[in-house]
Length: 423
Image (cartoon, rainbow, N blue to C red; front, top):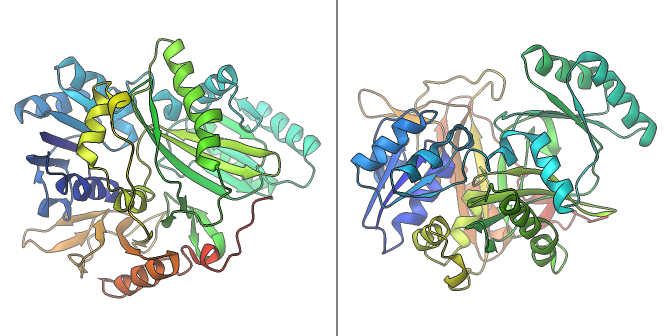
């Protein structure tokens, strides 16, 4: 099987690592890829926002399966264009990808499917923003405000703040840029990321993970695309995956099919385990980053066959998923200035070590690795338990060099110390 992966981040590097271990995968390419994926997969230039270009590349390369990593090409219709060429594609249609592309659309789907989620108020102007914030204050006095960009924002389009001025400023900036805003009620309790592979009918959940969104230790600093993650979750309630499958994942997939917009690919449910039960924070239409980096190393089932079964409507006949024992931790090494104004072009050394996944890297004219994005590396390790995986991950972080780099020192620490509580 010839597999083409679309994307250039650590998620795509993790996908390439897993696919290269699948004996059914005879050829592997990653477009455009990064300095790390080049060691595993053929690199080819591509504009990931160009569905026609992606489809043409897949046909020219004679791909049997295309795996679309990022959300931008999915929302733009890359999966549709690939399938129109008669090539299997792991990823939802443009219509189905609106589960991530429009938070308002996702709310409508959840309401129709009876999926538990936060109450929300769509906002189209400054007056509506103030009215929505007033309503939140009336219903939950003292709770933080939650203001979201309704469209794609690379995981950074939400502000959760006790400061109303900050909430207004974020909402106003989105509106002034021509976007729409969603104000939501605040959800208490720890958050969980749960991936599910689906062919539009059958849904196979993976192991839950938790990522760290804030830039700095102790969940301080600005929101980011994710500064690290770990899996599994020793504090998660027993039966959580089965509950989410029954109340969130399967109802959502069934509702999308009922609408004539079947969702095939990776359905990512961002969840809050609140005092009132499980609530959906958001849906994504693709593998999450950095959670992919900790989920895939634990998956013993060959990834290529699993993704192809989903892409071809054959998941019902796929064997049950198998998992390796132990735990995984990934720590993101970010460029100075991330997320506001990351500095790029700095040399990176130690990036070829075991467990180092490239996120924002490129090769210079001399073949040396340089930083090319805000999140530069995702340093990952597996251990017998979470404490061992965490220790090994930070030992590997110490082996990489990037001038003025930043990383959190507390990824998975609260879980290891038993400090996470479900209300």
